[in-house]
Image 1 (cartoon, rainbow, N blue to C red):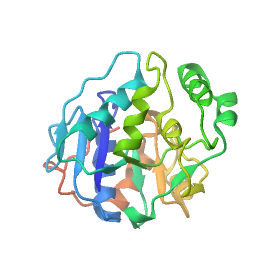
Image 2 (cartoon, one colour):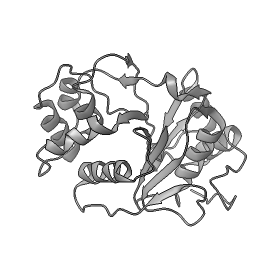
Image 3 (cartoon, one colour):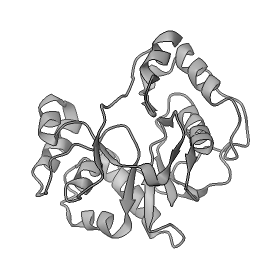
Image 4 (cartoon, rainbow, N blue to C red):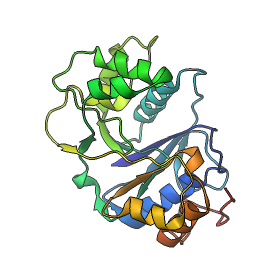
Length: 236
């Protein structure tokens, strides 16, 4: 199974999120084949399949959908993929076969507490027909199957949708509850250690990049992966 990482140019840390994500994949994940990066690809990256795809201005979710479709349209991509964002760090060993549709509550609950454009995408998704209401747009990777994902082309893409939940609303089985974790503020090292205790996944926002985070990630993933041609980690 291939890993697909959509990438834009918004990183405030010179794409070092991606660097540590790739290190976490190489160190802790088994059962995958290639890494495919769709969109922007930093010059220090090597040994990946790179598919160029521009973002659509003002359409974040649609841009992600298009990048995922571009990966599926590539002739050498596996029929199922592991969709993975560049700021999702795998902190413990895991095999691809152990992935689940992780969810945190329902889409209706998240629609009440979300704000801004993302709230609109959640509400649009909540109006779709489905056999479950699980909210799977949490900060973990997810497995997509080509034919099922391509069915999303039938949606009215003049609107935005939260893509993971739109995909899983008509799936059965393999759903597991997982309290979402994304840290978007600077914390001291000791608090970062506490955040990941007993957890496989850590995700960050741009304001989470700080000395404590850099120390944590460097301790867990000190070795350059085969996907890097440069060892330099830029300062936050």
